[in-house]
Image 1: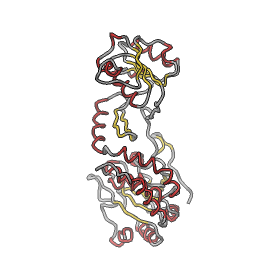
Image 2 (image 1 turned 180 degrees about the vertical axis):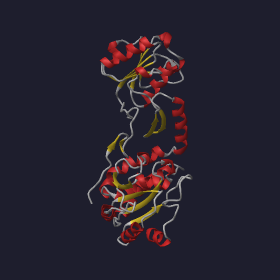
Image 3 (image 1 turned 60 degrees about the vertical axis):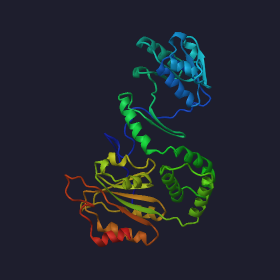
Image 4 (image 1 turned 90 degrees about the vertical axis):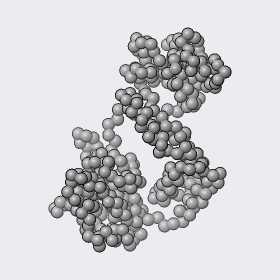
Length: 376
């Protein structure tokens, strides 16, 4: 079968990345110099954040402008000193930007903000003027810190309170032990890659690791790295088989996807989908997954492509994403049973149908013998 990819449309490439208000990036600042202009409490918070990221922070502010938080940070009080902060008791000037990686300022008025931004631009240094979006070449997000795991949330400066609310929700989802698990992953990654070649087995290992890291509880024990490598050795001895998942989905409402369906989409190598599945649903899939749209047959149904069978037999993780408002084709279940007999794991994840829809793909269940062939 010839590979048929989704074509660009007015809304962009279906299932790929939707338009972004800004590019989310993480800036490496360890050992690099940054400038912070101003001594306000807001400037102190930005200076502390930059120092926490490993930067050498150069603060330019007249003594009269120094707030108590900035004085503490700069070592003017006995409460705390900053090992990566250099204080310059004067206002910034154009040469202050030389050798700087980033520039941050808290400016008194728009004229000063414009001058600061222009001076930074002239030196090729990205600038951020606090609370003045028009003079920001980059923005700070609201941060969830489980370093080395870092989550940053941005509303493009439109609703910082919303970003903070989202951060609070994410805080409840990520255990504080997550950083310790990531440290272990860094230690074992190279040796793990020697044990497990790229492909399904390596992904199975990391999916198991993720479940353990996100489970919470106490920090990993000292011998956790050795235990992980032993698990990789056991996994490498197993025969590699493919995986085929039939996922029912409301064609246009991503919120009706079950958690199990989202996990399947995020672990897929290839996704075959009905032609009425919209970009909002496909946006939840793994970025690297190849997406293949399936056309409609003469009976108004789309079947399972022969290519999907070959990929599953070759050890790939294949998802057949079916619109939940269509009757499930019996022929697909028969092929699923044929695959299962050849060592391919086959799974069916029912979809959720909106209340205002008529009974559909999984709501009007296929015949019992068909489900049996799929799930046995």
